[in-house]
Image (cartoon, rainbow, N blue to C red):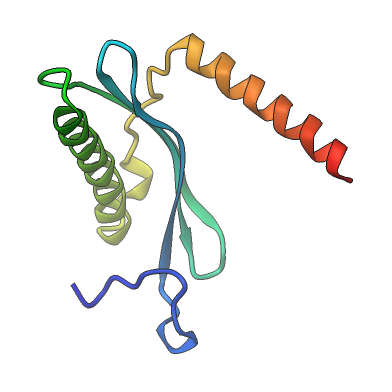
Length: 129
């Protein structure tokens, strides 16, 4: 659609809303279950965050092949896209306060990995200064 502009956009194409996505995890695990964990937000033209959410989606690969893992990754990306699209539709219809997908059921092991990763980043940032 011509209403979607990829970043970086030209000054003449300043969008009314931005969708920012931070992928915290997006890979198949040892059991060939694809995990997608993303933190995403919708920001208005005044740079105010209207929606800030996390999404955690899993999909098993149909078999152990790389092709099956990639297909499952594509399906989880589509799930995330649908969730963001639902939030955008709620904003456009004026019912954004009614949109609430709930808290994602992120496994504790991933939360611990994310915390350790942030600590490592902080330590490494301190070393580079």
